[in-house]
Image (cartoon, rainbow, N blue to C red; front, top):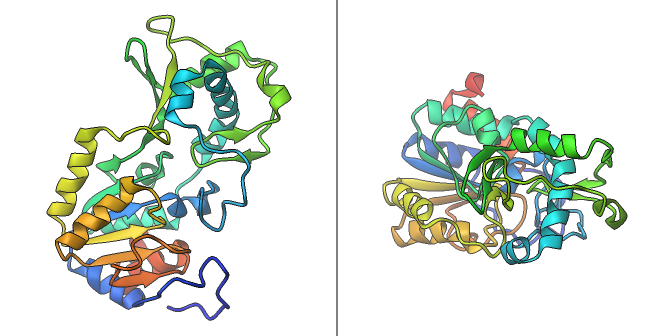
Length: 294
């Protein structure tokens, strides 16, 4: 499958290699590790930071230093996140998520690693997903280290802010919504229900924060035992995902990349496709004789 539409400026410099048949042949060999990014969730209504759906958002993502060191920034993050969470919680898996689950059920995958924090792979049927950057559905207390479900925190925030019915004008991939500054100051934050203090932090890796070492090591182990690496919907702009591509390249593993715009793996990708994942992955399943499982 090859798009006949003119390339956009976003796609213009991407070196397309191979096709759906080549991707299916690679996956049919089994042992693939799939690494996904924000591009696999855009069809579920969650935008990405750098791809074609980023739409020039004016709000920079929260950094770890700001969240931990600035109470005002932390308060404003939670106000925006409180408003943005329902869109994340209500998002449904799309054809891409379901296709990954189908490949896994067919025994063709050695592992699934996602850079996303939306939990949509699991909703789509995938299991044992390594959430490289954590999950918005979990919250931790930085004081007593209690682990909480996000719904519990959301209920507490709703009880404290019954009149905070502001609607988000825009949503970011981490559930941090765009709100007018005037609305943020009237938001009340909850403390930790276990220790009564906090602060509470979503169980995600913010920009500038390190991924837990054990999680990184587990991902390297998956790649070490893989027969190929398939990147879906990621530009690999940050090192947290790119390092696994580099590890695969050092082992001379075939690398496939399916994402709309340029990626930092374009120089090592044996298969490089730019079509939408919602088209490529169902077509790949059909080629593999798995289409009915998507």
